[in-house]
Image (cartoon, rainbow, N blue to C red; front, side):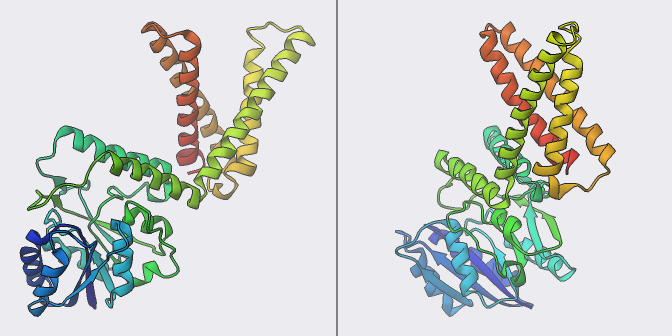
Length: 352
């Protein structure tokens, strides 16, 4: 099994000597190559990497017209000769000593092996509290928006290994921010394993986390939702919800004006008919490809989602009004949050 270690770099010159030596030590029993894809670093990272090729099996790609981490990794994939690709950063926050554990997971049957901070035994070292919140928040957003990766604890890890076959036929987007997430959505694989590791301290250079990075991540999630069809599903769910409003209002008006029922009590059957309308159209249209559970369970869970949404809406409404917000604005915010909650419960539970 030949291993290709792909390392995207930008101003990482001071880390390379130690990084390459540690990789060499842990892969001495493997046939391996190191592929450095450098975005024309001002500090001469590419030049220094080439000088180390006399001692290590290093191939250096210097890019002068293209920039970006994901496109650099994709270029590395194209240049790699290995059966297994390992992707890692050059800043030594990804300890090379974890590579054999990733390869062991691959040898035991995994198609993708992820060095994970968020499985038992994993962690981060000396992060500020806000950095932890940003990381956990990003993962939560990705797992909720993209159900295919909801069981992966660290889908945004930059340290992972995969079989070459995983990428066959996959059209990876070089604009994407987190390349692993892109692979998990578009790649061909059956089994993913996560190996615990501790995200270490940067040895040299500067962290690239910033507001632009976070915005790019959200854009990436949005693009993957479109590609996966989850955005279309959200639009369908919205349209069905609007039809439920029409059904609810129509039957409420009919019960009161034609049947002479009490205005308060009439809302109960009108609401139930709207729920049944929404369930029927969602089952036949929005989630028609996800009917894995019996009909009665889907219907029961859909009612639970509706009740959960109602409770969330009322709680937010009451809380915001108590804090002094105008009741119509508070109600609107409650409706929006309730809608998101109902969609997520139905997507991950009712038709999950």
